[in-house]
Amino acid sequence: MANLIIIGSQWGDEGKGKIVDLFTAHFDIIARYQGGHNAGHTVIINGRKYILHLVPSGILHPDKLCVIGNGMVIDPSALKTEIEELREGGIDCKDRLFISNRAHLILDYHRLVEKGDEDRRGDARIGTTNRGIGPAYEDKMGRRGLRVCDLFNPETLKSRLQDNVRLKQALVPSIAESLDVDAIYDKALKLGRELSGYVVDVADFMNRNLDEGKSVLFEGAQGTMLDVDHGTYPFVTASCATAGGACTGTGVGPTRIDGVVGISKAYTTRVGEGPFPTELHDETGNLIREQGQEYGASTGRPRRCGWFDAVVVNYSRRINSLDSLVITKLDVLDVLDEIKICTGYRYKGDLLKTVPADIQVLEQCRPEYLTVKGWKQKTDAIQDFNDLPVIARDYLKRLSDLVDTEISIISTGPDRVQTIVASRDSRLSSWIKL
Ligand code: IMP
Image (cartoon, protein in one colour):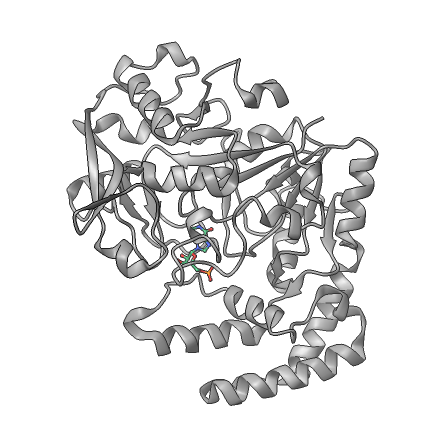
């Protein structure tokens, strides 16, 4: 039984939800390890659409166990709402959802602090999802955060809340009036009681299950370029969205993990601010947005669209030790006369083949493109690789060569059935038989 990590190899929204859903049948446990309800996985099953923000999409499969790891930040109100919505849709999380007692909490003041911070940054704002993610991770690293286990310790909860609220009031005087410690405390205690049945020591839970031979699919959220260490800092999220985060975020050591699968769109998108070398500011960008319905699952914001960037995905291969790549939304490109692939960045006469650390340098990089003809045929719902137009197959082959990674799966539409297994002889197929 293999244990695999799935990560986004661009700026998030690569369609991980569908691929995780496709892989889920081959695993016993599906675990999220970083981020919070800034993520939004959309899964369509039998025409019904589910948008999940915190709970792994494995919950839609009745025999799977789902984990919210210690590396995540949890807004208990958002989690409660999600559990209730799942229940209304006929899905019961009881005895199947396990929440880490060490995960940090997002409380009402985090969102207010974030808004104040974004306003203060003005034109240099990050363009966050405004879910309180960054400030909650700041408190974690500042060693003043409140964790899920604190919901069951009223004295600690109260005194730490008082300290934290005082600090936020001093930091952002404009929110001082709106913060009522007693109200936050009462609400947190109540939510703690409601969620208590799901709370466990996740590292212990995971390792015991692994000892018993159970297999785990680690479900990354966001993407490599939004990782706090390896992304386009400071225009990143506050967590470890790369493969390494799976270990720290669940308490499972690296030697227990067998492989890493990267998900990438056949083009590139990004939401929020920050550098995006292959961004299109023209009609083609608008066409890709409309064809791909590129609007944020969590915030509804229009996504910025651009060409496939092999520099980014290659960088992602290295950072995550990718074994295999899944290409999603190939069908979105069906309408284009020609398609470009970025093969390098031109910076002051030099040709860069990797992502520079300094975003001012990245902002000045000009993509070097390889231009290929569009296939101009419908590919949606194709299920056999050989049924793809030759030009589309060539396009995929070029991507695979440029990022030096096998392409094991191609997605040609949102539904489970709109999927091509590119090769029965891939590294991926040595772990799961699709
Ligand atoms: P935060 O995670 O809300 O702090 O936002 C930081 C950056 O990450 C912003 O550019 C967001 O748009 C981006 N971001 C956060 N979550 C996602 C996601 O699930 N998909 C794509 N971008 C995201």
